[in-house]
Image (cartoon, rainbow, N blue to C red; front, side, top):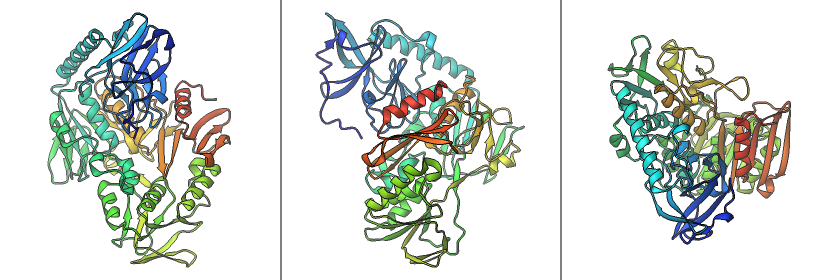
Length: 541
């Protein structure tokens, strides 16, 4: 989280010389104790909170694109005009601040109200103009347009019923966006999980390490669903969908009709098939319940075996080491994460974990598990009171397949995330969509991708016809190192390297021909954002 204890930069309440803020530039200062980001685009001035509402990233170190700013930590995007969170992973807005020009100085006055949850970003043609965007008059005009658009959306959608099957990233983002965009019809979320939507990436990171309290984990408090009239049905399984009749059936036999449906059933962990894999101390890590169960067993001095050097497995290894658990990692590859991140980062990740006390058994698989030890395929034994399996996930497509939807290693969707059945959309880990950047179909199991697909699907359910063209992005946090990855490069011809991972300063460009297919970085947040923008604009070469 950002350190907000001491204000930094100039006192914007006292003002700065207008000539000191160049066109297209940003500056972080403070008003009393509050950090404020001041930005300029042409004659327009903007002032918003300087801290991202996702994990508290420093927006002033991010990238200004038009009249938006992108967070350098996890690539959330905010409107400089209204403060709205335009792109996940942030969904909560930041506040705007009122600006005055006085005797050649820019002065930031009081904080204005953040956009309400049902606020809608005005269209480009309707956005306010002039030299003082953050004035009370401009904010009031924007709020009036937002309210009017919400009322129009509500009138057209009041008789509709949208059902979302799933309770993860895509499902929550879709439900939140539907209400934010003014949908006034019935909205039901049906989740097999026992918990309301939560921050899944944290389950293998800070929460598992014991550095994030459980109250951080829910994406919204329980009253959010009541206040926004979202009928959240937990621990409930959908067993059948009738696309023609626009009805679905629950496990208990109840039937629910829908005008439109979003399938966001996510993915499930691949189970280990070795003898003993069903013992109670053998756990997967996918749900909040899974993470709680691992925490319960992860006492200091406990011995754990992580099966698989996946992102989940390695994040779990780092988290358990923070709890002073003795950790061994068993994986068949020669280098951890080499298939995704290449040999340089693979070697670095291994050395990072080994320097923190992790023991690797690479080129090995698990032959059998006993109550207090694990036997490897070469006959060696490793003591273990806890076994965490992280060997990948598979999409939960069975429901879509039974409904007769087109599937092929996922649920096939078009550029608007529509399935083969009218009125039915799919998003998140199950969706395979046409990639506008690489010319092939993609199915990617990343949190931010799922959230952004949920947001796009929601807007398209309301008739927007928005093309899903977001560049894939994910991050992993292991110990004190954060690795960001934008794009998609299942294979590459070469990797161009800048910097040194051991110095915690690295940029890798994964090239396919002359095109940059992906970029991985360590502590180069601005470079990662620039790479994302270049891929969006087709300039990644």
